[in-house]
Amino acid sequence: MTSGFVETFREIDSGLRIIVTFANTDWEIEYIRDDLEETYTEEEFEKTYREHLASQLASENLSAVIEGGEFVGEMFLFEDIVVFQFPSSRYEGMFVSYDWTESFPTNDVFAAADELPTIE
Image (spheres, rainbow, N blue to C red):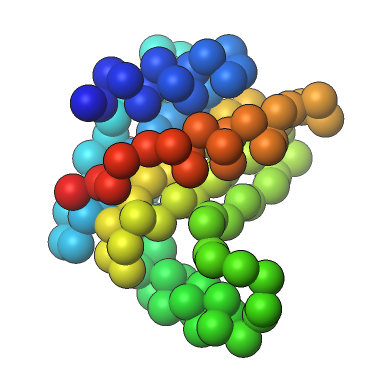
């Protein structure tokens, strides 16, 4: 299953950076681009995972207030990077990161995530 969704996101844009899945109390790097392997430490991923758990509750509260349909994910836009967070349940889901360009196919990423099976 892993290689299937990695290939799905890789086909969207060649700037795929990282895919991390998370479930309950753990996370796993499913893909990291070769030039980034030395960029991030395990401690940084662990810190990000813990911060995600806290922010996930805030997202659920916001989703309950905003009448815009079902919550499907979050997007974090930095100067050179775009990060998508797709929850599949309260404490499970996936982070997908790409190099950011103005012509980046954002809608294609959300559409691909919508077709994925639940992360377990």
